[in-house]
Image 1 (tube, one colour):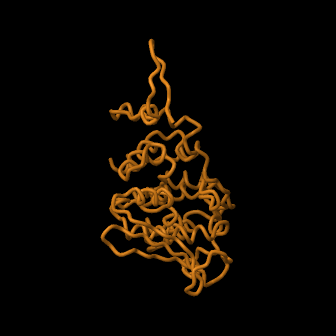
Image 2 (cartoon, rainbow, N blue to C red):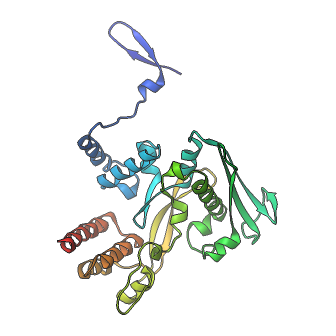
Image 3 (tube, rainbow, N blue to C red):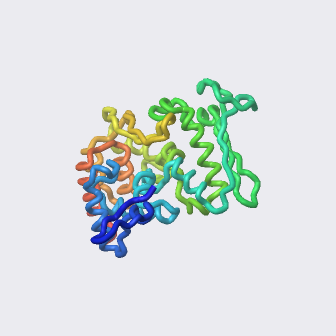
Length: 304
């Protein structure tokens, strides 16, 4: 397929590749101006709206592993302060690597490959094999029993709605990280990180509550409040497209609780704790903006 470009005297036939070059700012100022305008567009994911610096950072992080601007903002997520990549995008990065040979994904029950099965079968196991040039295939698995042991199988949200897909993505993420750590450059796979408890990121230590995780400490600092609902972006297992599903957050802190926690924080650890609470609560963009402003203010005060 070709495109026609009209000039004064003639029509030139050009390659589509030459007419579809993506705009690329050449300076930091131009890039930030571009991100500022992009942050107001409906095309931008809701989590990045009004956040030009977050857009810029997602863009740059995606660029380090070969993603363009649009792929980066659609597939780079921040979970508990840690940048992650969606599983399908991670596989795309691996497939485009010069040392990639092949990959295979399948399910087994009691050692036999299956294509039709019940996801409730306790013997169901998802496998992913990735072969890299000059190496033996890296084969990783994740089973229903693994999910039960990790307390994921009864978890509300995508594990209840798309258990087959979640098993597949867990096996895939492990195989990708083992076979192509250089391709991802240390960026975690989102489907794996989202299930880690908050205490895997920050440990809060106080005189009265030693070495308790975020969830436990929140019960001491603020009493339980009513559940809230938030929207989480997941992969539709049938179409492979990103869709939004409603997820209930139990004992979610209120905006006032988090605001008071930020105001009363006496050290960086307590400040980070309050920041983690805010991330888990499903606040509106306006509330998040207010909390972010207060967080930066308190952080500056503590560093002074």
